[in-house]
Every structure is written in C-alpha cells, then in structure tokens.
Image (cartoon, rainbow, N blue to C red; front, top):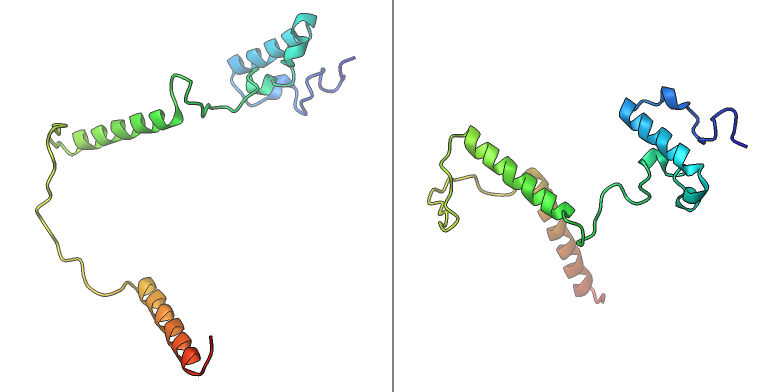
Length: 138
C-alpha cells in the first residue's frame, strides 16, 4: 500500500509543491505511474523519478558517447576566445600563422613579499642544516 503522507513517492514534499517546472513535475509523475506497472517494476522508475528516470551520473564521462566533457570544454573555450576577439575588434588569426610577441616590458625585480618569506625560510633551514652538520650531526 502506498504511504498516505507522500502518496507512495517517498518525497517529503508533495509533488505539486516541488520547486520545479511544470514539465519536470509531469515527467516525475509519469515515472511514478509507469513504475507502478508490473512490466516496468525491474526498472525502479519510482526510485529514480527525481532524476527523470536516469539512474546514472547526471553527465557522462565516457569517451564512447557522442560528446565528452573535454570536447564541451574545448568548444566553450573556443567560443569564448572568439567572442573576446570580436569584442576587442581584433582580426582573425590564420591557423597557419605563428604569433610572435616582440614587445617586452620591465615588470620589476626581486621577490614578491610571499616569495621573499619563502626564500628566507629556505635560507634559514639550509643554515640550520649546515650548523648541524658542522657540529657532527647526520
């Protein structure tokens, strides 16, 4: 017998009060209804209704699918690069051309404050090791 509080859904919140689109709500309801039929019992559709019937990871990491996450990242990177180029009104680059940057700017010398602290720590440790070795340590 289905639970009277949740209507057999196992959800704490009733379906009409879920904060999802009407279409998603209908898909969840359909999974619950199909999950009650004997021919679909082994699919456990009701259990995975919140994922709209898909029992795996929400995105695939398999190389056998048509689009991998790496391919999506590459396409997104190319699109953003092209959009930035168009916004800056830069000319398109020929793929057979090598970009050579022949302009150098002086950025400063010495360590940054964090790098200076790290360098001082390394120097201090080496001094301690030298003193330790001079005193007959290992």
